[in-house]
Length: 318
Image (cartoon, rainbow, N blue to C red):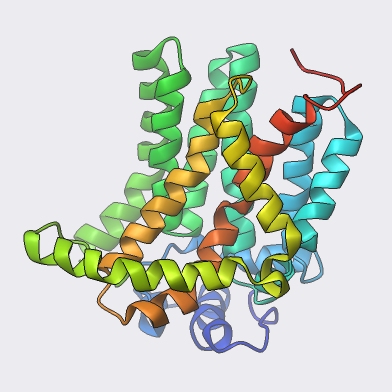
């Protein structure tokens, strides 16, 4: 499947398809996969991408849609909540569009949701095995896309904030993550001295801070135009944003820290975009919708259960 699952998209057949074919057919050294651009990107990327295309007939978003629905069904004890969430997620035009490109977003959604689900289950049971599994899935997210590293760091911070046994629990989580992810860091950064073009401008100094601040108004305006476009986000994106703000300030919200996880991811993405050396309007237009969809499943599994339990006649997990 690494050979044949390639959509009609430049990045896919010129970069990621080529990497996948080298993995499937190549007999030379592993460094060969770095000759097609983005040399620092994880090797699990094209492998999982090809496998997901085979599993779902090209509609990769079914992975995270199904797992997100399971999380919500478990937290709300309602099959209807899970099914409605899956329908809402798929109805956002940007979701099937990105999935049809066969980018790594759908496998990334899956890995992140699996990691978050394990820690949700740990909150219920207190089983250390769930922490270990969360660390493994967080590492898988990092192996799928570099954005997964950011997710793992934020997830660990959230976990530290909600864990009663912070030192032991957080040590287990980050220990498992580092053991799994360290070989990739060693191979890319130490053995081959590969770097990421995404973070080339991310240097904190007075000059770069002024540079980023000057670019902020243009970035916010470009993001505003994207997010208010009903053709890209329908009314689901607006509804999710309104519900998130309501829950954030509602005194009845139980898991407020979980709500902050996707918001902090968006804030970190915006920081990277602002410090990038490319034209800010071009950078936002080419990346922000994709970055927004990356955190959309996290918004669903943290917002929907809180909203659902307030509905009259709903079954609550408390």
